[in-house]
Length: 537
Image (cartoon, rainbow, N blue to C red; front, side, top):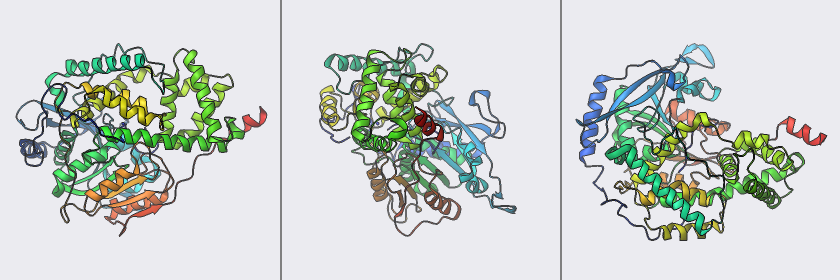
């Protein structure tokens, strides 16, 4: 599954021929609930509680304002060996204001720390405390210390790397929706080389970058913050290891929010989940095309979704033969429009870029889809963590013929993202480290406090069925759905109904008696400048 973050910020249908053993060894399948790792977590948490977190000025590398403070938490690399090698996770915090944003004279009792993870795997939450300055978050920021952190492998938290970020490979410009045999062969070779690079640059430590260890790290962070019980919000992938935490440490939970939930069914993690995602993005791409068609008078891309699709394919063909600015080909175009599948507030900008390109002006498209060298190191690190965690977490098919068959079938009905999702995840077919068996996420009545699940009905990155499955597995959880919407990550976004349920839960511990629904937030509209320019044309 690809990364998601808070609103306004920023990879199956068939499971066939799945080989349980990894490419390079026997499966590592201990019972994670009654294991040496669980005992090691208790040892590490006790040490962290005694040490605490020494918050101070944030290093320049974090690029955070002075009112946010930073520190580190020490965790074992291998929880089975808590006295062995240790790594440090970076943490950021802004303290609760203690002031009611509606009445500055009214004091608000502090409710502890709210810890946040934005997803990924591979995304950093170090910027999370900044969210407290937004109007939608001020009430929560009054009651809670807002705490972000970089999970293991991310940023300065024992960073992972699979290739030299100083010498990135030449970007691939082509992205065929019906790849040839020769193209597939080249991408297979690339996936094998990438997997070897991960092992070469990380060594034996590579196997310890897992979702289970992310959950264990979360418990050590809880203890270091001085919290007897954890209040946590996870988005996208953050919901998955949050669910693992709820299963491993239910008595350590105070409140948990799962925003845009990953399907935790062990049979879905991660191969099937990525196929489901590709299918869902086809539907969201159709939503976007229908929106552009409604504004044909502004963009001139077609009066129907099918006409818009033909305009998009025309741009793909032109870019395939002559990349815009020499840097934007079909792959970059698809990447930019994939972002719009996550967040509909990208729709006007992406539509304008496509329209301008087809009319002879490539600058807007280069601006939204072109390379950003200053972000290359961060992107390489995020990709390495994403790959390591997902490949380590679960069995994957090790026979290319399985991937080829399943995705060829899927691409016939969902060509938009299918093959790009394959190339992103294919290193897992050739992964050199042992795989785990996914934990069966499940809690019994009374074992876990009530939790809140938020989901958009047409979310493509984490289809709604995942939220429904998570609710079935976490006793006492309540699902709030934003009907008719598809934005990925809806907490604190433009929907006041969703935010009302979020505030009621985090501030008062109050949930609706049964599952609830909110009307969709308003879809974006083209900016006035675009409408004026169209009239003048």
